[in-house]
Structures are given as structure tokens and as C-alpha cells.
Amino acid sequence: MNNNGFGFNPNNDDDDEDRRNNQNPFSIFGFGNGGGFTGSGSGPGDGGFGDILNQVGQMLSGIGSSFANQEPGSPVNYNIAERTAERSIGNVPPIKESDRAAMEEAVQLVELWLDDSTILPTSGSRVEAWNALDWLHKTLPTWKRMVTPVAKRMNESQLDNVPEEARDMLNAAASMMQQMSSMQVGVELGRDLGELATQALSGSDFGVPVAPAGTIAILPAHMAKMTKDLPVPPQDAMVYLCALEAARQRLFKHVPWLVERLIASVEEYAAGLEMDSSHVEEALREINLEGDMNQLQDMMAQLQDIDFSPRISSRNASATSRLETLLALIEGWVEYVVTEALSKRIPSTVAMNQAWRRRRATGGSAEHAFSKVVGIEFATPKVSEALELWRRVTVAVGAERRDKIWDHPDFLPVAADLDNSAEFIDGLLAESDSFDPIAEIDALEKMLAAEADKKKAEDAGSGAGEPGAGEPGAGESGSGAGETTSGESGSGADEPSDKASGDEPKDKGGEDGKGGEEQA
Image (cartoon, one colour):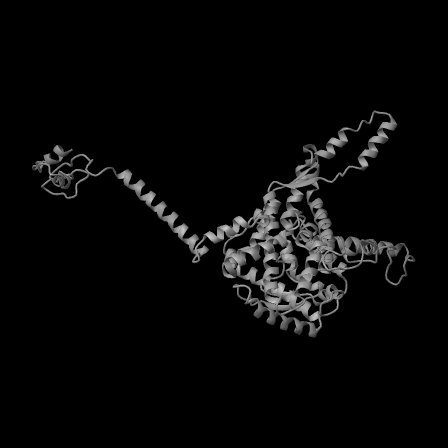
């Protein structure tokens, strides 16, 4: 991952390679110092055969411990992932009490200012100052919800590509293979989370709601590193970052469907994952092992230029588009309301906005986090376009009507609206000033229910027959099926209509109800 990705780190990628090369390849299992298999009491490289056996025993013990701590059936060994990430992060300094106090004061201040730019009330979230390890441990549960369905479907897709004749052999070792695969994925996930943890600035950085619900979290040490080269006072940077996080939490708290819709989009994408290895099979079929050596060497040289990794796609490609658009709308709204709240109060707001946009452009954005950690690739969310859309909506219909758009997912702009917002805004302007989207939904549901009840009643009425259409009754009553009265008079059901039409009154029937027969 690009070192400049999430925190304006000026170091180049060579540092990443050096760090990885110096890592103990066995450290993920919690033992040894890597090269040399050094034992206790021995210096590097001078251990005897007994020390080597001791280290091998520790290695096998570590692997067994990793298997034992693995969640049954999980496609990812999250225990290894967490330990790998912790080792990648290393030692972190404790949070200074002064930083914690400054953050709490900044949040209190920006909450008052945000009230002027949005009708969404304060989230009432607790304020926490985090370091990289805090970020890792407290966001991991949400990352699990997004990583697990993708990793599970990837494993299933790999098995789908196994030839039928080889499946019986693989089934015999399926349990061990699943455990080894989950360990490998856990190691890779741990490295990515560890790197992301050292770059993140807040609990819901990049607009991805991975922090625990009801938490406004800032990483002061990372913020100081990010802003040290900016022409912005540190206290202004703290206020700006707190405002961004407070605005996000207002959105996540008062739009209850928002977080679940993001995760549902990930799950939908994962459900449609497919792996295509046909290009590899086609390349291998072209190899002619019976040809001359020169031709064979040319073919082998061509194979070196082929990417043998399977091509991964999803049948549910619309899920990534929805995810991309939703993240853009979140971050665009957040940046707009924060700018409205701070620009007249904090002179450096413009400079912070520019720095924030540069950070997104150099990799500090949601698509990089999803690509590295979750394994979903999509285009960079159009945050600038979304910000402009929210600005135009505010000018056209005001902040109150703008924020009511979040009341239901069906009211949100779609991807096409980010490029051309005119039609979306025209639709808002065409609505009455008293428009209440939730009331409109309730009214629609009531109308549909009333129509269903009416149709049900009509179906029941048609089954009972037309009035007066029945045969005359037997016995003294002599009443027909459509009679309104019964008794010895045996009056027919059509009597009232006869009188109303002015016809001569019919014979009202005798004792045996003949009047009913005449009418029938």
C-alpha cells in the first residue's frame, strides 16, 4: 500500500519493503526471532541442534495455538489477523491527557456550530482519544462483518474451479486446507489493518462507519503528524477533524438504515463473486510440449508475461456502484455542512478542505480501504460532485428540505445525479413546501391497503351471487335467496324495486310462496 495513502506520510514505499524484509516470518505465531532459530541463552547463530529442535517445537506449538483459537468455520483466522496487526503497529505512546481534554472541548464547540448548518441534532456520542492499537481493536468487529462474506465466497469460488476428478482428494483434506487458508488470509488482513491503523485519523475515517456506534474518536498523534507541514494552527486542525467526525456521527445516528445499507451492499457484492481462470487454461493449452526447444522457450517466455491470478468479478456489480455513490453522498454532505459551520469562524477552514481533498486524491479514501482490507474494488467516490450537489440542493430548497432527503433511501440521489443534478433538483422544486416524505410513504401504504381491502370485499361479494337471483324457498317462509324479509307472507326480494319503478304490484304470494316463483 502507498505509504502516503492515509496520512500524508512523506516516506516512500522502500521503507515498507525494508520493514517487511526485517519482519520475523514466524512472528505471527508468537515465537522466536526469525532467522537463526536462536534459543534462550544463546546468541544469534550460535545455537546448537537442541536449540533448533526447541525452536521448531515452539513453531509447531504456535501453529497449534492458532488453530485452537480459530472460530469454527470462519474463512478468516481473526486471531492471527489481530496479532499480526498488533506486531505491525508496534509500540504506541499513551494518549496525553491534554490531547484528550482539547478534543472534548473541540467537540463541544463544533456541536454548537453544526446546529447552524444542519437540522440533524447532535448524536450525543461519547468522545474518545485513540491511538493506533485502539483503532485496531475497536473497529475490528465492524471490519469482520464486511470481510467475512467476501472471504467466504472467495473460498467457495476457488472450490468451484477445482476439476471434478480432484474434488474427492481435496475433500479428504478439506478441514486442514480450510484452516491453512484462513491463516493465510488472516496474515494478509492483519498486515493491511496494521498499516491502515497507523494512517487513520478518526474512528469513521473515509466515511466508513467502522467505529462503535455512538463514538466520536480522533487519533491525536496521527493528526499532529498529518498537519505538521500545513500552514494551519494545530488547534484549528483539531476543531476541523472533530467537526468532520461529529457530522458523520449525526448522520449515522439519525439515519438508522445508513450503516446497514453499506454493509448490505458488501454482502450483496460478495454473494455474486465469481472467479474466472479460463485465460490461464487457454494459455496452457497453447503450449506444445512436442515442439522444438526454441519454440518451447518462446512459449515459456510468453507465459512469464501472463497474469495467472484468477479474474474476480461479481454478478451483483450494481452493489459496488451503490456503495460508491453512498460513500460519496456521505462524505460530500459531511464536508459541506462542516464548511458551512466553520468557514465564518475558523479562517483556516479553506486550507483544511484543500488538505483533506489532497489526502483523498493520494489514496486516503474509502475505495483504498475497501480494496486493501475487504477486497472490493470500485472507482473513487465522487465526493466533490456530491458536495456540489448538496450545495445546489441547499440553495434550491434550503437545509431542512435537504436533510429530509436522508429520511428514506429511495429519496437519495443516484449515481447519475452526481454528474447532472438538475433533474434531481427540479424534482425537489416541484414538490410542495409542506412535503413530508415519511407522511407520503404512510399515505401510500394506507392507499394500497385500502385498495387491497376493497378488492377483497368485491371478490367476496361476487361469490355470494346477485340479489334476488336465488330459487324460492320451501315451506311456509317461501323466501328467495335475495329476499330482504322472510315470513309467512313469502314476499319476493324484488318488491321494493317494482314499486320504485311504478310497475303494477306483483302477487305477493300465497301460503306456498308462489309470489316468489312469479318474480323469479
